[in-house]
Image 1 (cartoon, rainbow, N blue to C red):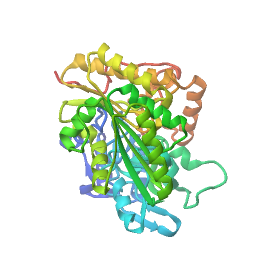
Image 2 (cartoon, helix red, strand yellow; image 1 turned 90 degrees about the vertical axis):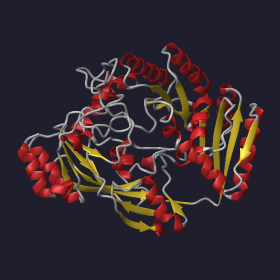
Image 3 (cartoon, helix red, strand yellow; image 1 turned 135 degrees about the vertical axis):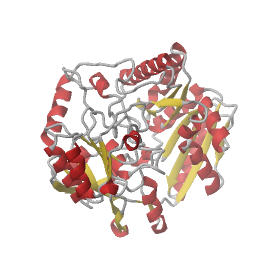
Image 4 (tube, helix red, strand yellow; image 1 turned 60 degrees about the vertical axis):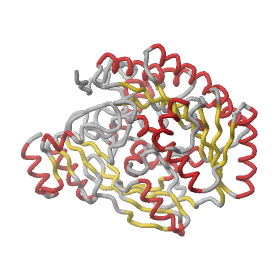
Length: 477
């Protein structure tokens, strides 16, 4: 990067808000994925005006720009694939307004997801999207990736909870779309920008919908001796049109790792468990819990346990939320998949994942949002083993292809990023991809905002290219 640009950024923001030394840049080469990409500079704005000025400077020097929240993303969305400036939003972390009467909050993008719920819990309110990384991920990152979480089965993903945005466009202009109202006439611009992964604009302020805490909550743990019985229970719950607030599944391998770490009370001798939560009016919750218990027992659950109090409930959910961390105790690294399938195809899909595990001689743990068919297979590996990593990438590709073949999608909440952009032709036609290119070009004509993400980089839009290992990753020998 040109030294003059670094000097101008430093003059604009101050020396404490610009990082450019090699040792500092190394900390921003990665996110939660297996991808790598080195930026040339990190900047820390504190306002939309700062962001606008940074963008205008970057344009003068024709530098790529990548927005970054907490770096917990799992598809390479916050990685500087082509170098350039990373705009880190960690200092734009204020809750600007809590409007309890209208069930709204206005926040900056660097606000941590869980901090918003903590800030409004005394009002009997909370923010519904709850990714597993909610203790550290930011709402700006959630907006960029359209993040989900266990409890979005009933309430929807991030886009369903965003009503307004302040944006800095690629030319530096600051605009506002939406507001506090639930519905508006005209095009759904918020829906366009949420999930656009920073390729259309940079988000500098977010208006979100808050939810009232339910009158009653019941958390159930159903224990099974076979994976088929577990998945068939989920199918039956779907057939009966029961919509719990959450329905999570952990297979035996995963729950044993979790139990050794968290001591949540998961039985270590079973094949799988379902963690199911129902909430609402007391009478409805009792009825739903009884019907779900009946379904689980009909499908040979050996035990259906109900959390007796908030302490037990929180411990069970801690086990679920810290499952990825538990895997880190038993493997040097893991590759997290994020495919979506129709819930009725769960049994065959888990069997297919087991076949892929055997084919490539890899350990794969399964933990996922069973209620909405959002799979998160965890493929364990040692990044120092080049040959093993090549098998990991191939196994991940086969899992994604299977998801598409059974009528699913490439992502449910982690985004496409630089992990799966070359797989987009599996589900979109050349005309689809060409139209997406035109939409991106309408907002980001120079392509400087988060380049190399979401859309394929092949010469033809319909081309599918999956390298044996991501070109951006250097595997140490």
